Amino acid sequence: MRKRDREATRARLLEAARLRFAREGYDGTSVRDIAGDAGVDAGLIFRYFGSKKQLFDEITADIPADLLDGPEEELVARMVRSVVFADWTRYGGEHPLVAMLRSSAHEDTRQRIREEVCTTYVRALEDLAEGDDAELRAELLSAWLVGIGILRSVVATPALAGAGLDDLAPHVAAVAGDLLGRPMSGTSDA
Amino acid sequence: MRKRDREATRARLLEAARLRFAREGYDGTSVRDIAGDAGVDAGLIFRYFGSKKQLFDEITADIPADLLDGPEEELVARMVRSVVFADWTRYGGEHPLVAMLRSSAHEDTRQRIREEVCTTYVRALEDLAEGDDAELRAELLSAWLVGIGILRSVVATPALAGAGLDDLAPHVAAVAGDLLGRPMSGTSDA
DNA sequence: TCCTAAAGTCATCGAACGCTGACTTGAGGG
DNA sequence: CCCTCAAGTCAGCGTTCGATGACTTTAGGA
Image (tube, rainbow over all chains, first blue to last red; front, top):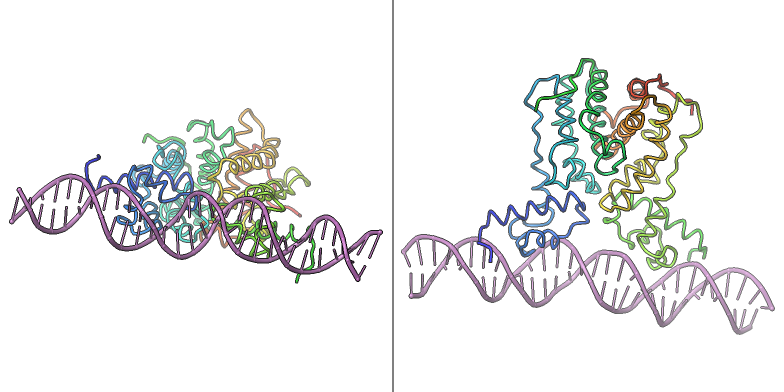
């Protein structure tokens, strides 16, 4: 028998739920699936998290984002790296925002995605843009990153799925520079 | 009592299912929901379509696409118009491809999206692009259109959700021209 | 060594799921 | 008019869902 450790079990449930929710979506995931993956009884989910929904909320509340630190002109490059080459195995191999779209039938989820996109992507890009429609251009660039993530991992179109960072970075940097009205670096040292 | 009309009832079920699947996703939609919307008994779904899955397949098999006819240089403008301003009320107000992403937990659905994206979007753009990585640049542009559709209707970021065709077309045309290596018109007379 | 609080298990609930087959109803031809 | 066949209905199958609460097991302090 496994050692009795509340925190460790909670963490195992979170880990399993993160993967299941990302891969199969909220409606496609059952609490028995999650508990089975974690190797514990399904009742613990309700003991520790209250409900399936609260477990989902706890997972979607802490999406890692490490885009803030680094030179401004490399921000877009860091975003591409994050979307395309970061290690998202804990989220089923996709960027968590992309995975969350699978649960976007629920308004709660759409709102969480909106907050995440606006606060960590649009706002950061908006500060780099110039002109009166800076927000729109920042959102257009965010849309592109989201779209690239989707076509790469969900749709898996041949060229994008096989593309490397070096293939993408120049194109993205060029368009980003054009869209933001200032030059962008295609590489980042992160 | 409603008139007995096999084809009309089948059409009502298809209409209701299209809306439900688009809004709530495959897993979030029950056959009783669909039948209830159509005002008929759920048993007819199995009589007419065999299974819930076959009903879903029949719906996703015929996604309208009217991008082919018109001048080449207006193709991108037509795509933007299709993604952003076409009337997709039958699909819950979103482009059917965007709505299908809600059911992307199933590999079958991902494959159908891939076919649709590649055959009607990437291929059409690829023919316009020049150079050896034409396919990649065509997919990058497709990714942008998909991302715009998602941020507009699913995520509903403020600027994009409120943007009109006139706000978007110039930016898209500029980037598309840059990405494809040839000038693109920002407007279409369609 | 007991006792207790907590960690984990288990049986089971009511509701909803996809799906089936027997049934009822109604329109059209003889 | 009535018979037939298909359209439509209905009760219910077996299963799975989220959730509950009583139960058993273990760790650790008195």
